[in-house]
Image: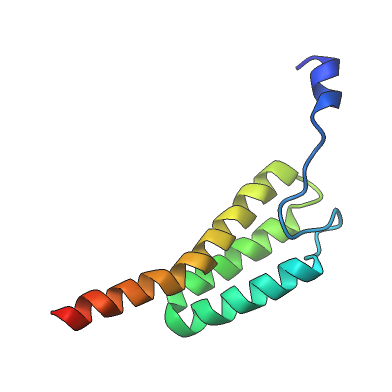
Length: 95
């Protein structure tokens, strides 16, 4: 990578985090709501989402790109767990 390319693209923080690896106030609110909903609707996916979130927050300072992937996966799991559960209830309820 050239020197220009290295300076042209700043390291972006993963959504909902600060440079020191903490959650922003918006990240805390969204995470708490999605986590609570996921735990009550689809427990195994919620636990996986929480574990990935913790792993991502631990890596924000040392490896921001890897942390961003882990945090993105955790947000997806925490958002999709209730949707998957509702779909399963609808499908199984119609049988």
